[in-house]
Image (cartoon, rainbow, N blue to C red; front, side, top):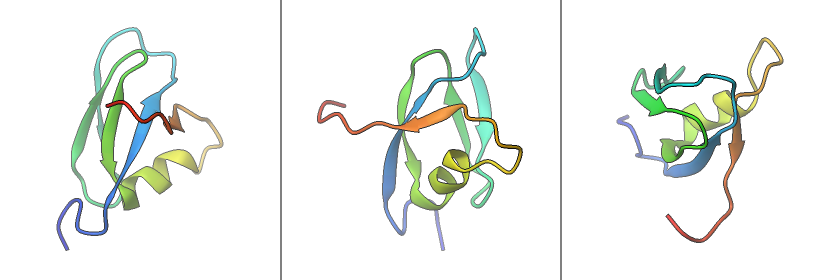
Length: 68
């Protein structure tokens, strides 16, 4: 499989970082650059992992806005 093969989800970064950080996708290994308030398309498999982190912290939320 390749990134995006199963689709994408739009995530918004809501974490505490003040600058852009490269977040490695836990499934695909793709690096997603997110900074304060950024909204980006993320491979669906990575997005689901980002939304339910093992440590219980939350740095992302699903963005349901129509605009991108």
